[in-house]
Amino acid sequence: MFDTLDIKIRKVFGDLAVNKGLARIGVVTRLPRFISEYLISKYCKGGSGKKCLSKVAKIVSEYYPDPKEKDYVLGKIKQKGRITLIDEFRVRVDLRRNMYFLHIPCLQINDALVDDKIIEEYERIFSGLWGIGVLEYVPGFLNTAFNLRKKMIFTPIMLTDFEPFQVYNIDLNILVEGRGDFTLSEWMDVIVKSIGLNPKRYTYGQKMLILFRILPLIEGNVNLLELGPRATGKTYLYRNITYYSRIYAGGIVSPARLFFDARIKIPGDIATKDVVVFDEISKVKFSNPDEMVAKLKDYMVDGFFERATLKRAHSDCSLVFLGNIDLEVTHRIGSVLNYLPIFMRDSAFMDRIHGIIPGWELPKIMKSEEHLATGYGLASDYLSEVFHRFRKISFRNIVDQHFELIGPYTIRDEEGVKRLLSGVMKLMFPHCEFDLSELYNIANITVELRQKISDLLTIVSPKEFPSKKLEIKVRG
Image (cartoon, rainbow, N blue to C red; front, side, top):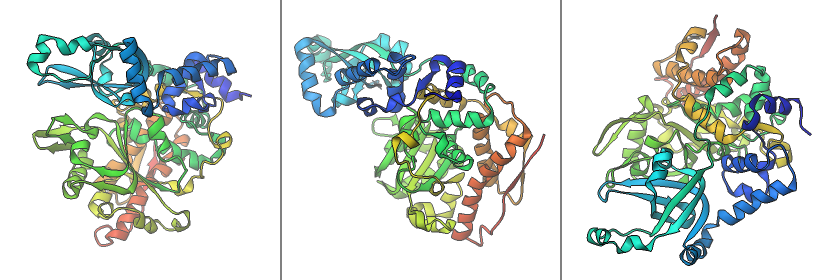
């Protein structure tokens, strides 16, 4: 049964609303949520019957092969000359060979070909674009005199037709204008449902913490740390709700992957993504720790970085550090230090983090039917694109107009709080309409994120960072 909020969401947002419960069906969960929701919304409009769900499952099963089926699929394309696949296709440019090369993840191919017309129509394919594509076997390309002379070696498969699954052209005003039809409380529930969680299972304060996870996506150069128990959804948002993220789940991270690969002259993830997430931060290792930490600290100040031949580049990529923590030890903020890697316990690094989300205050996600969203919410691919577009819109003048910072703020305290507030205002009040009374609780909870950083700094270096209380005033 759909409740009154579901009905309202469908009325206001129409085709942009999707049934969140349907996106959890078996085979579709192999895909990122923003893709499974696209398929659900396309084939299950206005219904939840078994027929449309079976159709989606059949499409995924037929066109999205498991990586272990690679040779079977390659054999099929060799026999039939063409196949249709669902994947996140990505194009890179090779200037030395004057060619475009296609990356097909499910086939583990990095050097296929792509029709120029697809690149012209869908420029975002350079950063990766999910969709359904027609791949043709073109062995003739290997036999041309031009290719033999240049000794070009590539996989003779070409992407000749492509339909993107992700929202490509959006109208931001639909969300901005639609926000006016909801109260603040309703709007918070809309966003929580839209990112896949059940708002009825969370208190007001817990919903705020969940929504704070979105700030690095909607506001540029926001650096956050979240520590909490396992299974509280820390990574879920960045993996399933946006295609502008890169997640390092432990392992070794190199300066080349993160900033710039001088050998092949390709920008790293910080230069091309909206957010880079270091998951299970205690297990992340750097291939060159001294260089990496120094460059991270430099970048976290103002978004500039340089490496090798790349001089003074800028990015608005946000950084998120996630870590698991035992629930029993969070009665005092200092206990979280034990869960941080050595480089993050440095006061200079810590001061560059804008806030700490206390994930230990959130409940674990247990039963899917209780903790995950049901009913209608905004489609994840649309919401992801909205977050991305809002990064280019400044709300700093609204922050300066309505908030006054009170207390011994440092420059980094001030910058951190204002960036967080700007993101909060975009998320909560994209239409720029609000009562001052609505801002008071939101402002104080936001400042508390930075207060936790201040408290940790006092523990790490009490002489340099004496204890202080950060406050905020809302004004008309």
